[in-house]
Length: 275
Image (cartoon, rainbow, N blue to C red; front, side, top):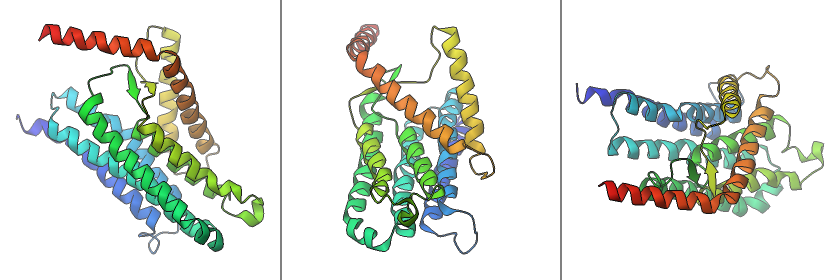
């Protein structure tokens, strides 16, 4: 019985790991011979499912009292696949499939640099969290979580392909091709930045909590329905929500930075005293 309780949280982590692998498969065209669906929308959908399921392994571990070092490390590996490698592979193969060949040849090195920086930042973000930040801050994230970075980038890529951003003949905007790369490298840097981002958790303000719960519910519904091309404005809603949370959240973190650090120091001292 002691060992069987670890099955549930590790099952959720295993699911996230495999969904991340399948997201890479969709983006790289592995399933192209077996499906006519948009590979980049499918890849984005699998990553979004990872985002929606990401908290369930931790919740399940606490529910059955099955937290472990193995689970923490396994979760980080799954996150690296789903939110680090999958969006980066999506970016590269999205440009390879959709960008003009001459532009792709001229900017290949830049794309590879963005790919490399983002993956490295995701890996460092996860290692840093496990090593230092997991117990340091309880109400804020230090840097952008890889979950949000991965979700943001795949939705951007899916939206860009569906709206014809890569068709420069139709848009007449060659510079627009750089937008997904700018967003990816910016989100990568934010992952390893020392900026604070408030966590989604209950607050003292009941109205704020109600709005937060409604937004979370609508986001989960939108995420699960993201695969349907007939439902309008899902991509736009997710982009506005994630972009707004990042901008407003980091702004609040900057304003409250000194207070957050002082509270963390007090909690650390209290913990040392109680030991």
